Length: 414
Image (cartoon, rainbow, N blue to C red; front, side):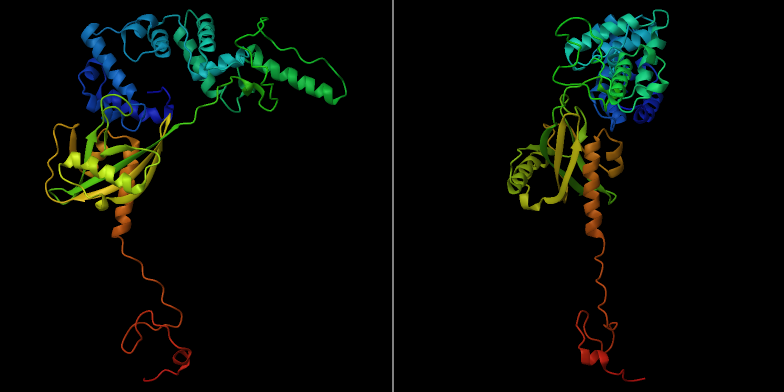
């Protein structure tokens, strides 16, 4: 759960998960639907699926016994990579193996002035070599957790707390900062010392050193390390989605949700009927394609003109900038769903929120409800114009402008 996700976000999910499935055996008996339902909103849904697959394999193929080494964990359990295997083996079973996550990468790159792209395979392999050499053989789990905590609380990405760092005297990035400061102060005093030497491995074209085209930035200090490659912009996608609504048996609205394929983005989750769109598609064509898609679900023609446009909902995944073009359609009478298509069902609003739906779909329903409230709220009357009398006997019709003569005329009657 902590992969790519902050602790504060994970805590509630972890608590609910452990209460529902306190053992591997309990998790192995759960359905993927239950797993996705409890994971809903946490993101990166393949993690939950892999976690359950791993539990099932341990129970069914490994007699309920977890592999106890990093090598066996990575080889035998689906979804377990190098970091997860090292963390479990060292923390749970005391194997003297290192771990490298984002926090450890940052600490090691600063300790050793690794200025090359920290996401490159060559640098990653060298960092793992360093971690395996550094790990304390007698307390590997404690050491690895301490190293990760150092990166999470002290050696942070921005504004690191170097003054509080317990390993500052070993940090080559810190030494580099001190040398640069000394060089700058001497230069201000009119002295001309040689350019400060920089620690290196003594080999030309070192794969760990900063590129010659990227000089030291004195304003960054130790945060010159690690260097990361520029992120690719997320891929833009447009999807038409329709909130299909009917009146339930108790008068409350019900919504049609369908299940996504078992692989790919948001695998196995439930959503409103949706259709990927071409980027340059005209609105009229969007409606027509969505109407055809809905017809396949409900088994009867859908008029494109009957689709009410709600608005656009934007949701950013790790690698996709997704725009949902949201429509709504109210259905009268019974609707027979085609069982040959993906699983589908009608749900109330409460059932929707407890189903395995993504955060993006919750945004879509929220936009729909906002539009419905806007349409049902009474239109506020405009303020009465200055000088107009309240409507009553002998009063002009609402909105009629009084003449100056009538306004200045003395009132009549008692």
